[in-house]
Image (cartoon, rainbow, N blue to C red; front, side, top):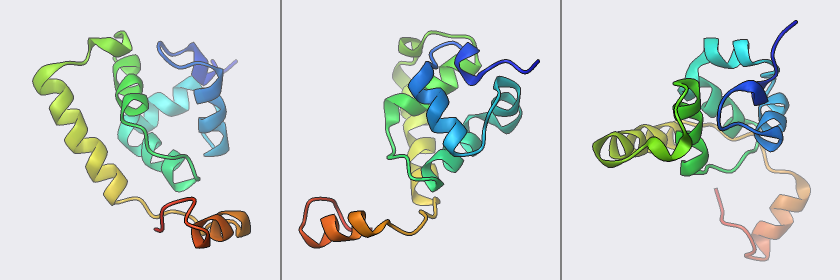
Length: 109
């Protein structure tokens, strides 16, 4: 039986649900995709980018605590995170998101 995403260090039920929405349903599938490809998928499926979430994922896949990331390693991960964000094609906004955008509640694409 496949292990859940939440069996990976640093990843709890909320993160597991985020990955499931992106079609990633097991720890093995997440490990096979790798942090960058998997994070890109969740962004493309409507999850807002969050740097700490990204590096917690990277650390978790390495079996390390999320707060183990520091210094030059953290700076390098920030560059990768920014590149993933820049290269992500978001799905069209929902009608409610478009309305909130018109009201200035959320940022435009």
